[in-house]
Amino acid sequence: MLRLAGLSVAYGSFTAIQAVDIEVQEGELVVLLGSNGAGKSTTFKAISGIEKPCEGDIYFEGKSIVKKSPDRIVKAGIVQCAEGRELFSRMTVSENLVMGAYVHRKQKTEVKNSLSRVYELFPILQEKKSHTAGSLSGGQQQMLAIGRALMAKPKLLMLDEPSIGLAPLIVEQMFEVIQRINNEGTTVLLAEQNANAALKIADRGYVFESGAVVVRGSSQELLTNDDVRKAYIGA
Ligand SMILES: Nc1ncnc2c1ncn2[C@@H]1O[C@H](COP(=O)(O)OP(=O)(O)O)[C@@H](O)[C@H]1O
Ligand SMILES: [Mg+2]
Image (cartoon, rainbow, N blue to C red):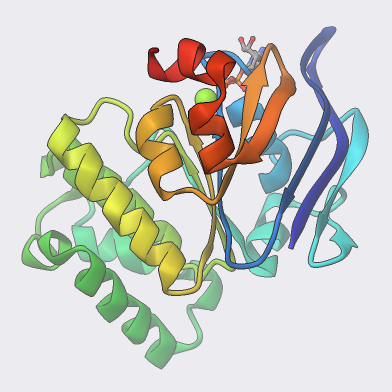
């Protein structure tokens, strides 16, 4: 479904990611692991079309997307849930969700159906649908951000560190919902520093170090890899 081939991205003279090869098959849940600054978000920005690569190519459903604008990439089915959440804090929960369906705004029935699905995944959002986004807790805001991304009906949902700053119990719930979204048919690409939790739900993973993929494998392989354990899980 998605293939990065020898992808490099530079910020001025600084190469943030170098010769990255990644594949995601339809239906998979794939995780990008790596500490702060390893290049996960840069990879996501390249896929979303926000940063243009200096080398390599990105294929989605067989076609190169590197020359497409970010909004055309969303229309093609790749939707990123932003790291900083970027909600409209003075708008209500339901208004934020409806904004997520902007690219499909003419299909009113579909927007309604997507909204019901999001409320079913996140009952708390339905309870708080008339509250402003800014009044929600951190975990609820993250759920709203994921819900808003789902409103765009992604084929591939990209989640950049959805567990950051959340309490352990909330993190657990978050990962359960991400797994459910994947089980119900949405392909998921996840970036995480929380390797343990992410590998529990992922099919496969890639470990980034200083802008390059240094280890790749099934979740089972990564969980039992000594270097990965030492660096990201704790022996
Ligand atoms: N807009 C930017 N300008 C310059 N350097 C950047 C920018 N964004 C990220 N970087 C650098 O690129 C590297 C990779 O960052 P990033 O992709 O955000 O890593 P991660 O998401 O894994 O923490 C880091 O060294 C970071 O400082
Ligand atoms: Mg990041």
